[in-house]
Image (cartoon, rainbow, N blue to C red; front, side, top):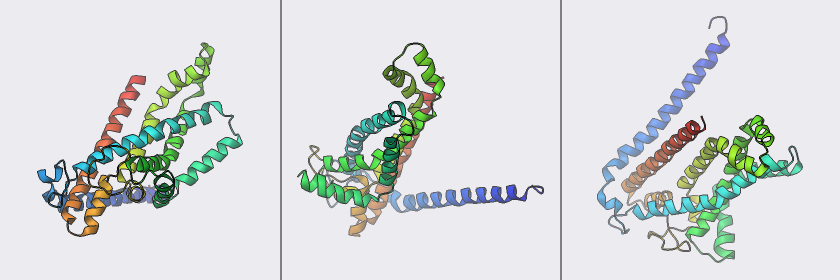
Length: 275
């Protein structure tokens, strides 16, 4: 360290930054738990919502429906687009450059802009109204760039020797992609999908303009409903159920942690399966 003071300087900065980040994370989690743990009661998980129990169960079920529907719309388009760009399109072509610039631009657009687009197009122009399908389509457009980019990078990380070996054995391009390339890139693809799920779960602005804030469980995809994040925002904005809003935040944190834990478990299983 005496011979290389720069190494000492950067090491101190690294540990200091890590410590500050960890302290901020623990402070946020602790603050939410301290203010909300006392309000986690059985009435908070009743099947129907009313002004007495302000149940979050309808919002939790709506969140699951919305996330699953958004993934069903976005994942096939995102994965197949990445496959075409990586395995079929000519490398260095203008098409690839345009798609990459477009996806990077879409990734930087604020979520409220997506919400306004969803309001004008899905809710008003297509006359879907405030509904689950309008919110899910808006979320699908939001997470599509993330899925495309992560899938593309995961496919590019697969060694070319895998492709050459498959072609040498007489396998076609389609068979090579689905039997060799995709299984090898699956951990990275899954990581991108999990990141997208986290964004869907925590999204508020885009869904207020598209899915609405109805407190009941939607009976169809063309009915309105509120997710956990919207439920928390509604309770805190009213000023009457601040404790319940903190309790909802705890459940939201638990859901996100569970999703991350599940993603790690699946990634390890897939990696071991390949070995």
